[in-house]
Length: 116
Image 1 (tube, rainbow, N blue to C red):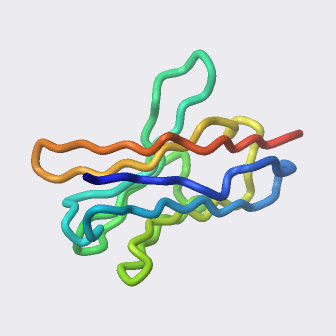
Image 2 (image 1 turned 180 degrees about the horizontal axis):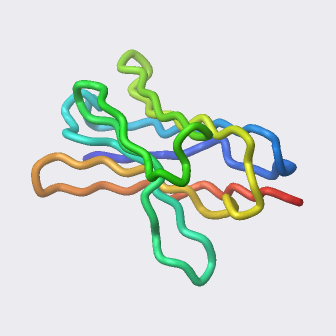
């Protein structure tokens, strides 16, 4: 059974940096077609933050390009998100996601709070 567990969230001041990670169990992350990070702020829909494909291609919404970087470590079976120049608007619960064919897996989320 696949499990995704996020860690690394917390409270940071505006302009600061934070790195969140997602460790997968039950399967090598190499078997997933795409892995990614999404976020959801109170009252908002869940939105895409970043994705990375099996062959390492990354994708970001234009609004986050240059500040956020997604990466993966096959040895640690982990996908990470480095977030720089954080803004209060980045405050949200950040969720790890993995997709393989029609299977879609989610972690439980980790809270990121950016104070002004």
